[in-house]
Amino acid sequence: MDFNTTAGAAASGTRFEGGDPRVDRRLATWVNTLTAPVNTSATASSYGPSMQLTADPKPNLEPIARRPMSNVNNNVNNNGNNNGNTDTNPNASSRTSGNANANSVALVVGATGKTGRRVVERLRARGIETREASRSGSTRFDWNDRGTWAPALEGANLAYVTYSPDLAVPEAVPAIRAFARLAAEREIERLVLLSGRGEEEAQRCEEIVRETNPRWTIVRASWFSQNFSEAFLLEPLRHGVLALPAGEIPEPFVDANDIADVASRALAEEGHEGEIYEVTGPRLLTFAQATQEIAAATKRDIRYEQVPVDVFVEGMRGHGIPSEIVSLTRYLFETVLDGRNAQTADGVRRALGRAPRDFSEYVRNTASTGVWAEPASAAV
Ligand SMILES: NC(=O)c1ccc[n+]([C@@H]2O[C@H](COP(=O)([O-])OP(=O)(O)OC[C@H]3O[C@@H](n4cnc5c(N)ncnc54)[C@H](OP(=O)(O)O)[C@@H]3O)[C@@H](O)[C@H]2O)c1
Image (cartoon, rainbow, N blue to C red; front, side, top):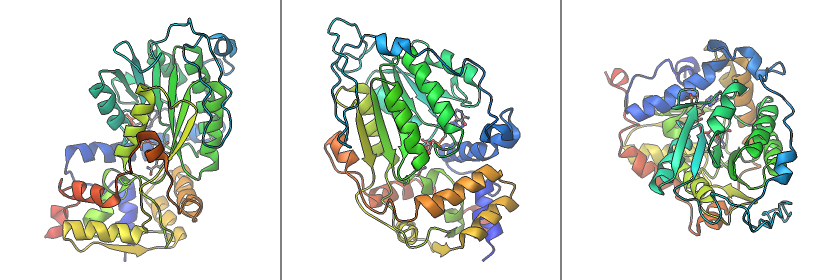
């Protein structure tokens, strides 16, 4: 097969030719993520040690220790460690004493993304005001422009935080550290961080949030099912061949709806502080098996093809994808998918008291939208 015209082209977004507008937007978001370092003021430096923070890089932490909290927070996380937050001030006022209420305002960072927009929907359905933050969101927020952070936090007391492009990139640690401190200095009473399973770097970011913010919840996710329909796996599937260096290692794909259910509940209801919810689907599948399920549901001839990781990343380079994203992709396929995550976890059940959605449910629902239909140009 010609790798350069399938997976690599899909990675660059060059062959995306319309379809469901919501998916257009998701894909555009992903392509923006890829091109941000070369096309925006962030430039390549945003991926290197030279990233500039525009405000005081050492915020005063004193207010964190002094800030009164209304709820006792003795939760022990699922690693068996006390999170150290034992504030017991019963007189303090809080917009989250008990459950979040009509006075609560939730900052959702990455609100146009796969999980963010679902979190927004759920919080709104609960009557919680949301502040939809991203570079293109109604509240401007850019991880590469620290000047946008404080205005976005102003007046919010809840925060759902997704970092782009990935917590595994080197500049995530200083950014998350600075943001978590700022959030703690402000009025943020509950912070939910979306993290990645099996990523050492992501877990460093989790630690920072746990040390910095009194009431944190970590949602540590496996690969999203929605990567097949709202991200870079969509285009190759539409064209009938999914070529990846994923091998035979199975993954318990998690539904972004479950992630959003967990995150929104952790923001809106008490009892989730100090928890690390490792969220996965209920079943392990290889990428080949996942592709087969999509082919069966769409009644299309779609096949999985294994490609060496070197070929895959060279294809990305050939399409002008920034080297940092190429490295991240190699890391995801070589390291995160090396078998370390090839087991299910109980985060969805612990948080929600129910089983996670199965991949087949995701496939059924998604196939019915027509998103995996063959593109008109390929059908002729
Ligand atoms: N996909 C997976 O399988 C998986 C698994 C585990 C963990 N994760 C983690 O999930 C996170 C991504 O969350 P997601 O999948 O819900 O989002 P997503 O679909 O990847 O969308 C990215 C979101 O972040 C915004 N964004 C991009 N660059 C930004 C920047 N420089 N500053 C501020 N916002 C920016 C985008 O909006 P704008 O374009 O408007 O800025 C968009 O709202 C990453 O940290 C990733 O590591 C993903």
